[in-house]
Image 1 (tube, rainbow, N blue to C red):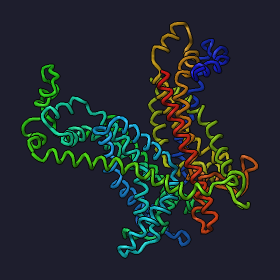
Image 2 (cartoon, one colour):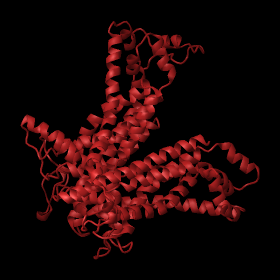
Image 3 (tube, one colour):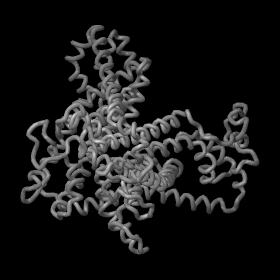
Image 4 (cartoon, one colour):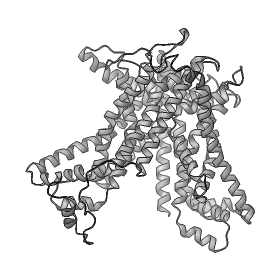
Length: 628
């Protein structure tokens, strides 16, 4: 029995009771609107909490010199946070300088040159690279990138350094993390260029590189710009990888090998040490509000470019382009498209065209290989250091046992992800149903924007949100403490918009004639939804849920501020709850060799789990397309 048929069979009692009358339609409308209202409430509360907690710092912004001084000494009343802003800007710029040329070059190669088989393989590898948890990136960056690559390089040139750690190392690891996003979005932009433009250039005798340079890239520029903006928003908010490799130095230094700190890193390390009335918490919240604004501005600008609201200024090819008396011959269209004074025409007759074309093809191919090389470096190094440390005791013992293990962390991670999924999956699905079934509702556009914005919110700010509401609320002098409730809440907030967007796309992909046939037979909208649309979209919906669960399974930053950790199994949901990513982060910084080996084993197991979930969801998605 196929999954859609099985799901329809499961839903049959619900369909017969709920959807048999118009009351079913009304009940479904109430449920979907309530879920949409929850999303709006969460987004509004997140902004309100940050603003309320940051208000004392905003009132004393100039007096405390928060954005004009580099003197950070809270014990003496100095809150100059300019050095953290500087660290965030430098690491993000370094990441863009590396990731944009490589990502765009790889995207152009995959779009214009690569064979379909190679394109599919590269896409698969990039998906795996994007799925690696940030704490694993950070662990690899500290031990391999900093100590084994940058450190010896600095020694060769006689530069002072701290084991290779610093702003440059953080920028490089950020570049690796955003490479899949830049490549994927730039690839989509290149593929959206009309084929007739390529044909016109080639008909004039242009080489493939000339066509790429003067046709594909100018037309795809808005999409590439959107990719850069979205990647910048991702880089600014990254926490764990940067925290582990940047050096965490709270002094200002512009040396290439200097250590530093960033806004997300500072919040992750110091927020849990503050009290609601302490000025330092207000300053940290103000920095979090600044981080939120930057991430949302980058996301909004990127999506505006994608929607065509922002167009780059480019020279029109010809006033009459596209108006060639209905003639579709590429050569005739090319003559209209490229006049004699166009730059492309000057290159057509060059004798170096063939050599330049071969050289640029090699450069673009190199860019494509360099984008997936970090995947093999990370997986190879993690396997080399961690695979041999995994034993049966790792899955059954605690850290203080002999031999030590992380059984409690595996249990805690599974518990947190299960709780978050039980909340986020139905809420996200109801939101998707609301957006699909009521596209003209006055709040439909607002809900869509909120889902996009919540997806772009840095994970550390989701952790701050859960910390303020459920761990150390400002309305009581006694903290409630870390708990599974708080951790699952933070993970569910991250998961809901992802499930909602993926489920919405799954429902859109269901052929319209299935709905029309059900309605023509007299079925209500609820019966049609439960008996036809959801079973048909079920594989794609499940794929989205699995991808979202895999993503939160590797999250660390929100759990540092909400669930934290414990050396034992949690006795209840109100106890601090250990998780595998948290203990990888914690033990990776310990000088004890036994704990570091345990961290390597945990990193290997975490990567295997996350990649297995990603691969399973990919094959499930492929089977979903094959059954339609």
